Image (tube, rainbow, N blue to C red; front, side, top):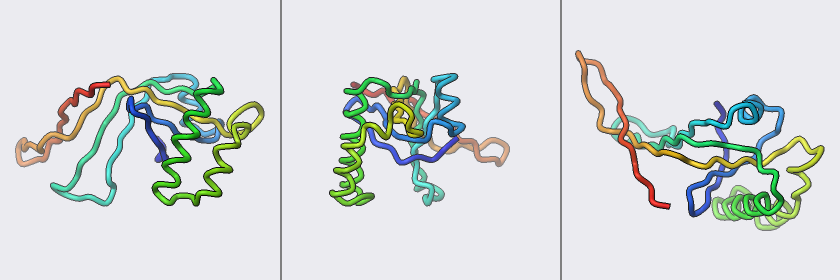
Length: 138
């Protein structure tokens, strides 16, 4: 499990980068089946909301796909003020930092199914969480 800064495209594909020697990167290379959880970790009680995703992930090796991921990532960095425009522009021009002998790689997760939290139920005075599947039209 790893918490990551990510971006996504209009088809709800998720993009992020990580060093290729991290545990999660190595596991993706061995088994592409992943589970993603997106949530506000500061929310409590009835304010808790989340999106759970079953997906297949892979290291992006195609140059055009890498550029697409970098463009999306750069746009999010500027929008969220994670990076200023000058830094973001340098980031997008550095494909080599995600190829060849570089230690970094960009990854893509292609979702298969989505769920949201369902109302909490009680069983013998214990809270029981459940999920509702969300159908997403692509």
